[in-house]
Image (cartoon, rainbow, N blue to C red; front, side, top):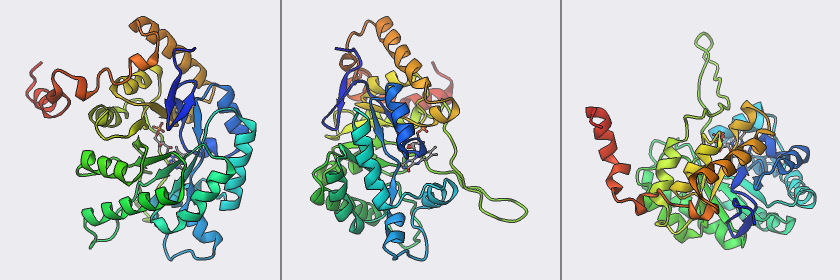
Amino acid sequence: MSKLHTSYLGLKLKNPLIVSSSSLTSNIESIEKLADAGAGAVVLKSLFEEQIQAETNEMGETLSHAEAYDYIEQMGMSLGPAQYLELVRESKSRVDIPVIASLNCVDGKWWKEYAVQLDSAGADALEVNLSLMPRRFDQKSGDLEKELIHTVETIRKHSSLPLAIKLGPYFTSLPEFATRLQKAGADALVLFNRFYQFDFDLSTGQPKGRVSLSSPEDYHQALRWISILFDRAGVELAASTGVHNAETALKMIAAGADAVQLCSVFYRNNTQILESILRDMEVQLDSLGVSDIQDLKGRYAQKRSEKPESYERLQYIKALTGLS
Ligand SMILES: Cc1cc2nc3c(=O)[nH]c(=O)nc-3n(C[C@H](O)[C@H](O)[C@H](O)COP(=O)(O)O)c2cc1C
């Protein structure tokens, strides 16, 4: 058995590297290339709530996800729900790695039907992107969290698929919220979604939001939170954002990730880079003396540290005061 074998969401993966939801996973040709390059699994491009609304002629006056403008309009990625189900079926028939469907939703009401249909189309699991942009000035953070929890409960009630919840990094008390997500039915958390970057043209005021790719330095926030949540929140963890090489992928595992999602690295290079990242992971495991990646999992999680405080404020104080 390969030293990279692992499991995530109850699925057997030949390695922990998953291609994140993106335009790379929106068509079968690209999905086949990623599978050939060695991906452990793929998360399909998201089906956005707004796309379902559009198809059912109930589009509200605004798109609720700031990101949906970007993903749907600028990227021209408007697979409707019917085409989406077809993509799930086709992917399952053409590649032999797990295929995780992705929904990007605002509230629970649309998902009952689609969660069931994704299951019968053959999806191996479901990832739900709950990275909402709060936009109402009268909405309290606690109320927003309650709505998110309700969404997860609703999906859980209607789908028996293994369920991963993808979050943005902006929560006041992530440990508590993670525990509530688990109780609501989440099997895994994907930390973190990367929001599109807002900008506008100074002379016209025209918004210029666009997808911005991460850089190899953007992984620290996910690393910290995975190391803090490992073996404490009752959920599996997948890293997302800033994983561009083997070393960072292995750090995520050592922090406690069950799987590692990659996206920008493929846009910055090409999909073939996956093969060299996998090779490098094997080499680096050898040099660490690790023969099975499971032995590395959580090795440097906060829970297992003799100095758990060093994961939090102490490190910050040291940095600011120049102590070593
Ligand atoms: C072009 C592009 C399209 C994306 N589309 C989606 C999407 O439909 N659903 C989603 O949950 N995340 C989407 N993402 C976010 C990625 O899945 C990933 O979480 C993010 O890019 C951070 O990972 P990275 O640093 O490896 O790029 C997209 C990212 C990019 C660059």
